[in-house]
Length: 188
Image 1 (tube, rainbow, N blue to C red):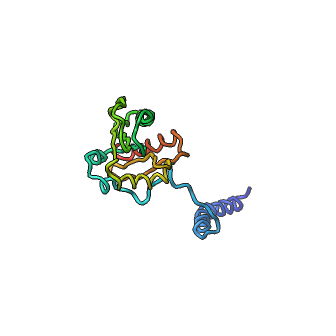
Image 2 (cartoon, one colour):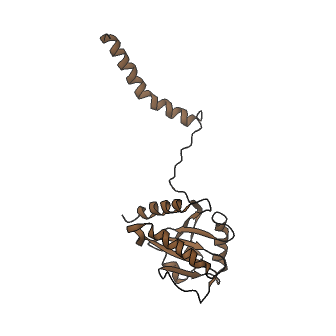
């Protein structure tokens, strides 16, 4: 190959190399190509607008929501033996975080507890909101984007906001990945 041909190929290649990103950017921004990247890693549903729990309750357990991520399981009835299954599941999510487990608090919110129910998981905060119809209504509305029928699984950010709900389509693996991403976010 002659030197003149090599130089022409080099110039053409260089021009293509530097103009192709401009052409692609123009095509994407003009709408000629309909491409929407998946811009989130999370599998849970973001709650919009965010709900500050302290706006609906002044109870002492609300103060425990600050400075930690909290995974809440909401059950809209008086908890009996079936709540131990929910507590066991919450406990497994926390264990799955390994050395970051201390960054995640667990909470079971119901309309009451059976007093004969053994407390196998003392590190899970158990809250009855039977006397707070306003907060019950908030959870009932949020249930529509979570597990339906008043039930739900939610994440509360360290700032005290309900910010994510998990749906029946979310697998345990999805929930664990989201929790792992969240607890890495702050404090490491």
